[in-house]
Image (tube, rainbow, N blue to C red; front, side):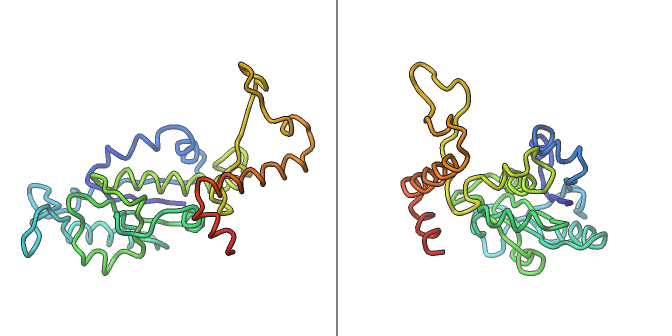
Length: 229
């Protein structure tokens, strides 16, 4: 998979990809991530990428020209299955969407900044708009990193144990069950006996029951969705 990220702050994005799972996925050649500084595509002497909005109002708007130049160049080099704009009013990122994106070959992500982007960018270039929640960030960079992390970890070969991603919360519209590790008894706080029994059938049943109870308690909306399906 190749991911191209367009941003006015590439330095803000680089560190998440220089450690842990994301770095290992890049080192293995399973994914390549490329950052494109929008200021490199502006025609103004001052590297301007934003301007006042027509009609007045507070906040600067990202200009269409540098975005068009950057996207047009990238699209001339390869085909993109998705061109994503990170915005609070996009569809909310969830595990289903992460699974869908993990199957793509080439993805482009535009990070919003200032007040947002010229609407014509959204109308003529963007194929998908994604939000990481009902709140506003200073820019789309951190949100883009969240999307990349959620997607990349699902690519086969990224995780050492490929079944790990399949048992994450939300994969089956249920929250994950409680998990424990050694010691089995710590200050009198003990691990459920069933997990020490060695009976894989009973353990899986216990985990399923715990997942259902956990989801009903903490995310009744998810349980209702799961129950309907």
